[in-house]
Image (cartoon, rainbow, N blue to C red; front, side, top):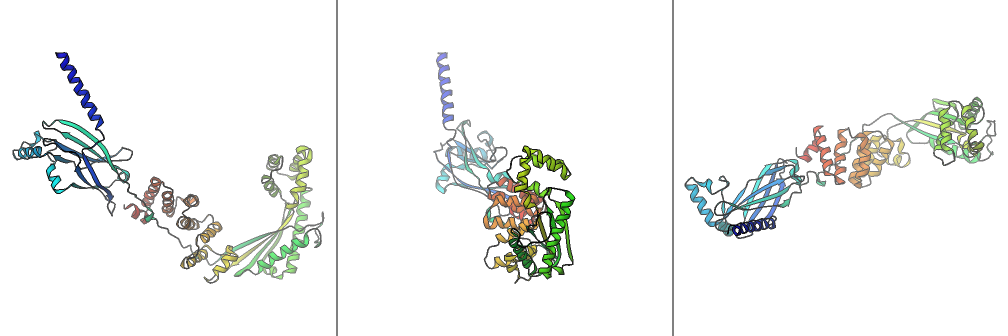
Length: 483
């Protein structure tokens, strides 16, 4: 007989466990109209919901509801105020015990005033609104509910738990994006330079100009056009002319230096005689760089010739032209040297003209024309003014800020303005971040960087940068984070 009783009890326990496991995710109540939100000042977090018993609560039962906010990674948790829903008989008993001062024996939470289930059916769902101080993790938290159900003997019959909703509160949204453009300081003194490479050819070992030799007629025409344009640039005063001769690195070093300087002087005399305006430049100098090993090295690096790395290594290893030339001639039984003579050396024989100008400030009426023809003559402030002018007319401004950035690549204001334009007009977050990266220590770069990361969907990094901006005194970042 005892054995039979033991088996019956064991069967009952197994059945109870099975029922509990089967109901673990099926809550007794319906949780509806859930709304989780952050206050306008950002300091409070509110949870609103209605509770409706979805299953008949027996007269002797009481259900305790324990709502809680749990962080997305389950590290943080905040318990909200619990609610109790009592069956009709249980409610009357609790009231009577409370009057007699003996309520603790029949209630788990004496401080929680229970709601009678029949009253819910008459008046509608239980409306819950709770407010707690906001913490960052709550923005992506889960609202979880645990239900504890007690029977007539105050024994817990079952405990259920489930997530009923998920918060999705953006701390930083596209509505918070703010694009700031900084006006660069105006300048009264501007400098501008232009360079030109002349490939006029000379007879071997000679420096007299022969206009009909090889392609010289065409090359001299190119040089003339350069000087003509250089002398008529609006708002400029030519005050520097530097003429430099270069030689290819074969033969005697000193002879090459002297010859390249004489050829440079020949072209300088030609330009002065044909274009008298250049003689007004207070500084007019002619010199020679001699053999252009640096130019040869660059050309070889950019080529795909055989033994390119060996040629570069020889140039880097030796300091004198004789040592370099001797070792290069040994490569591939002299074939490399022959190829250099044929394909690389002619381009190294050249004369460069470098013109320097003083540039006056331009009026707003002049700036568009100068931008279209010679944007390099404009200061960053003038380019900024053009962008504002275009904006007022509904015209493109992104390309204007791009020119400023390319013209002043190391300037933080040029980078900030271009990055903001990339974000505002093209939503090009990746390129904006690339532009801003060298200037990330500047507090003014932090907000556009945060916007860029947010555009890419990285809200955590965006908020991290915004907090850094707040610490550094950025008022816009403080407004966005409501701190």
